[in-house]
Image (cartoon, rainbow, N blue to C red):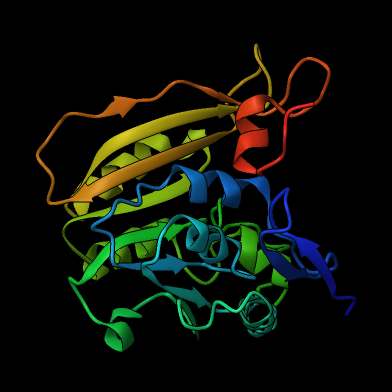
Length: 244
């Protein structure tokens, strides 16, 4: 399989191993890693569905917190390990190969300040899906459902800890219902649009474990492209590119 070494961000801050035949990291991951709240008191983080580790790597630029990445696919895990090593982040980032379901049995409960996840967006249900296909596993809920992800995040987090996730807007009601089911109170929400006057195609949402009911903040909308099909200044900033 053809592996390539790319810059993760605009300036040569980080490198990441990828394989375009499998599944490259996407803008979704960068949006989430930028959106998640990482305060001075944040000491330990878990990233579920880590893939080749773009979120742990990005977060390592924002915080000195210890970061654990959990990835079920062995090849993606191997790419992630290579990326952590080439960036000399092994003292901060550790990776686990395994299913996120019941990962708390390996890494502990009620002890993490932040859990992040860029999960599979699409529900299992198509008979034509190949459950052994790497792209299917990354995009469809064949190994873990939305409920599994949110339940695990709640178990991992300490009271007052935060869970941040990127997802699709058509599942927003289900997401909020499931968050509340596991005592995660939504506190920040941002809608992402490909362009002005286009429909929202992603959401960023953050919830606090055992937080007080209510108080949801809806942030300013985030637009990815200008009318000239170039990235907006907000996206350029996330990627650490300078605006032309």
